[in-house]
Image 1: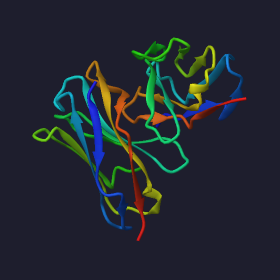
Image 2 (image 1 turned 120 degrees about the horizontal axis):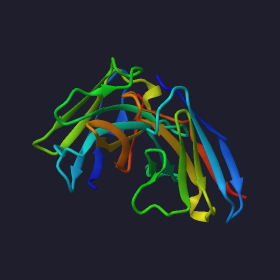
Image 3 (image 1 turned 180 degrees about the vertical axis):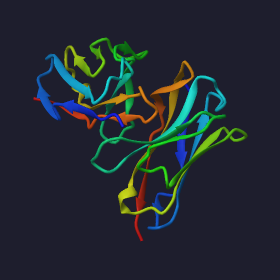
Image 4 (image 1 turned 90 degrees about the vertical axis):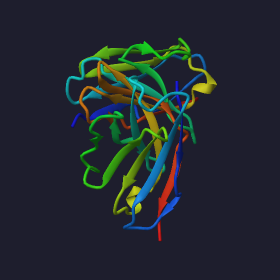
Amino acid sequence: DIQMTQSPSSLAASVGDSVTITCQASHDIRNYLSWYQQKPGKAPKLLIYDASNLETGVPSRFSGSGSGTDFTFTISSLQPEDIATYYCQQYDNLLFTFGPGTTVDIK
Amino acid sequence: QPQLQESGPGLVKPSETLSLTCTVSGDSIVSINYYWGWIRQPPGKGLEWIGSMYYSGTPYYNPSLKSRVTISVDTSKNQFSLKLRSVTAADTAVYYCAGQARIAARPSWFAPWAQGTLVTVSS
């Protein structure tokens, strides 16, 4: 299985700050990585696919980069509505795995 | 994008079988654009993939659950289903069904997701 790790597990930042989350895969997953946002009591929502492609309708302050084993997710200017837990997910092999999540809060 | 909605019992007794159905609307379940998957989330914890399948293919299952899981598609009802046998309290979770983008004939990212349904295993 491919294991996914994320860091940090949680963070707090001020409105307008840039926020970065990293996701690391235990094996090379090329660019087969997606990012999801999950707000409390809600289903996850796809934000980024293929490591860096923004899903239609997702604000441009969200971005992703990376390939191989190391990936980055960035919110360029944190907004109050971005309070959520963010998960990465690999789909390089057919045993799909999610990272443990990063909870983002407002300082 | 299609819309998805889970249905099924919210309470299952230990050792029994958890059965959920996901109804797809706004697109056909035989669409070439999607696999169909199940993901669960125990209370306060992260996401765990359960399994996925293309309407005409062989299901893929999480090895940790494979011995207890069956996913199937009913094309006549535009639905797909999850059965998880011999449940214990550890199977208590919010269960999500989701479309999984089919890219180059491979399953990839999950979108869209249904709202999720809490299934509690308790006597």
